[in-house]
Length: 231
Image (cartoon, rainbow, N blue to C red; front, side):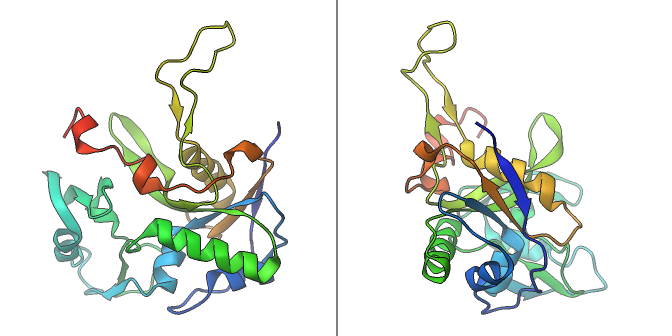
């Protein structure tokens, strides 16, 4: 199997109320079986999850962090690690001021899985193609330096592929292996999107057709507190 990563370039600036699917359809050829990775930032813009902050105070969004958190896990200086209403554990409740006008911060979508389904359905209406959608965001990782893009919402593509009960290359039965393919796809797509290149959408082509199904990041990837050894 080979996988192709295609940056969707030439998209206009997204504003509240814009239809992301229509913008994608006008900018790219979309095929059946494609998975499109769409950054949280443009989803939040289209859904008007934007709030005003003091442009002269780089910490003016900190009150929003408390508002958007259901629980604060750690504080160190200006950094807050908190749990959002979605169940995500991340820095500053996912609130972001990068690639936005001065005086504006972006909150996470209220329901990223629903956002992904909406884009998927609208793209089907616009192009006739059956595709998967992943809404991605950039997270840090405990015990490892560096940032990586992960899935915070998905539709039409498996969030997790359960390999338990299958055999490895030596014939041993796998006991615990569940692969977060939506996270892997989001991370791969970021290689052609970049953090500062103004490319908020990528097409991932050539993925295993067996991964095409209804799914949910919240239901499949977010670990329930009862199973979490670190909270």
